[in-house]
Length: 318
Length: 169
Image (cartoon, rainbow over all chains, first blue to last red; front, side):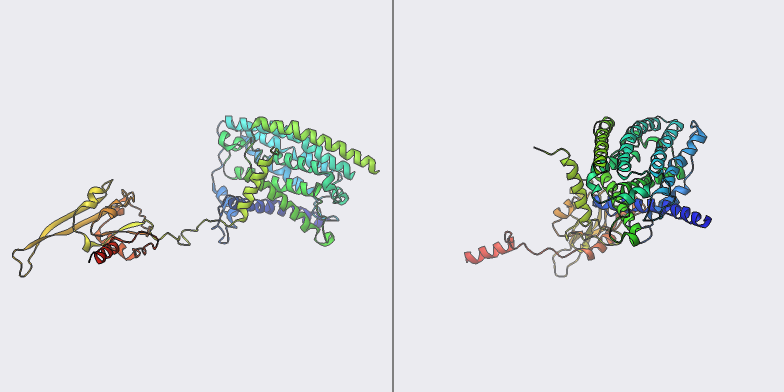
């Protein structure tokens, strides 16, 4: 029993350390080719496969600076607070049928939504403790954005939970049927878009907005702590992609799901992650007012309408 | 009538098309670039053709050509008096000043200067960009042969002259 637990946690940790790097490397190459470039070509000799390892070595060598005016302990703690929630989320996302999941949790969806919300605290900690006006502006933007987008995020997730009749992530995936793709389509879109905003990816990178706010709440960070924030962003992509795939795209469902279900899950996660990168390359950043308008005037009503639809179909079916 | 959000889709289409079309990036230090035959890389000097007329030096917009010479008497057996000819002592082009306009090559009446497509002569010290006449002479080996006459272009002066002479006689 103990060994089983250690094995599961170890595997989740391995996924936590490798999948974000995989996404990061894919982003390097995909973004480069979308911009008619080649991207990294030298690190590791074959098409720059070791570029992120080289980046990691570089970050580790850099000096760890804490500004004199900064609130030291909070400033130093923020990157860990940003990173840890995603590790916990990975623990409950089902990879395949049966008990191919880090931890069977009956309130998995509730846990995921609660823990992902911790991200905003990390951002506010970093922003406030940096004692930098750009950081503070970025942090406040992030707070406004994350609080706003939390609502459609939760509402669209609630829709699928209502459809499946359970809060357990493996339970939702098991209850999923292909026609849900159509039925839950608005929720899928709302969940994906607000998920993008949750992890502050372009086109929702107002809090970072390097052309106006230097680097937002990450302005004062250097070395490994900065790398932690970057890693948190890429784990965020993995988590949001995996959640979208598990909740709305059927997770491990697919041909021969009993034997290669985990592969379907990984493929779907990868496809969603590719879309995340694709959107980043193609679309410009939203302005702050556009960002709030999209959230409150489009996504929230859409999510509420989806909830009504889901409830209606559920009542009609039962 | 435009569909709202059509521009977003168009943007996605552009990036996807660029993604699947091969990149035109040239991996320069690993793969030599394919330059057009008449690329302007470096200026080569055919020393024997130079008569020290100084036209190139005077026409150079930023005065990057330095020429020194002296006169020599040549005694031709059987001639009434000895001839004088210019001997080139120094012919330097400072490539840190040169802007590759090619005017010196255009004005040279005796075809002593040529374009060569070689371009890998960067130096760590700016003073080493001053190429003397031996260095400029070495570039001669890299000068490509002149391009063939354009079959659709006007006939050359020599051809028209010959034709005119033939029709006159």
